[in-house]
Length: 443
Image (cartoon, rainbow, N blue to C red; front, side, top):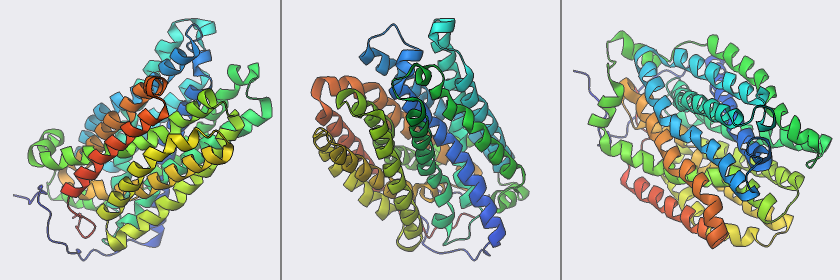
């Protein structure tokens, strides 16, 4: 019998693995970065488009408030289908390998992104338009469910012990890079044709979706020219795989799964508010110009890139759990300050609120790329990391998207800030109950 990971933390010791060649490191980094960049690029451009124009394009017969709720609800569909995708693609990844699964998820994800960019609006095909939009989002959520865990495992299982935080920085960095690209693309389009022009509503918002085709081509090329991870290859050669990874991970590591879901819940909630909802809040409630909030988003995303890199590198030196814990405490405190500061209404106040929020999210999000995979055994690592990550996305990201607008309308932004703080307290409690893993060997 193969020794399996359990809810008890193993002794902190490094395995004497030989570091991979630098060329392999660069290829793994690029393969991980491109996939998660595309994943989050779509998520952010969709979130921005939902905040700015989707109520007009797909829900023109609803009031502005209800149109915004409906548009953001279609974004929440992704979170609902992500756990299903993580279970299915996790099964494939744990049975057949990481590389093959990553090619499948990237292809499906890319086709759906381009599909949203070319589909007609409600003015052309009526009720069919929002239905197609939901179907595209469901399929995309299914694919995205397998993407993050595969990219994180591809990096972590290729990294030498003691360098996993540094290499898994790249799938985590993809989220920040994507937010920069998405905000910049919308900003350029907006400045070129005007935020209130018919052209922006008719076709301008489609440009960012169609541009993703280039990113997809690069990502597929890189992934098709990489090898399977050595950790999984060794496990497969020894017959150390399982026929039912989803059932086995829940049977053997139930406590770890529940705690990991709790950790990602608060982080996803804060990330969703910072990267999606605040754009809606700034334009509709605070009446800031579209160009102003998009520029603030670019600066905030750049700050998140810096803190993601720093936290990922630091996590190899001082550990993952302490960094994520400190970041969640900071996020909980900032959640209480966020909306009162934004309600000042000036670009400086709004910019400070959003930039600090995204910087704190980067500190929490960076180490997760190594932390979650290190919690699970190789035989069901893809499933364990992916399902816990994506169920946290449902509990944090999807729920907050559905209640953010009504909660803010009833209690103001302070009510939403209190809800964010409550979710982050859940994450803090789960982190206290989890062990440190940065010295835990994967093989």
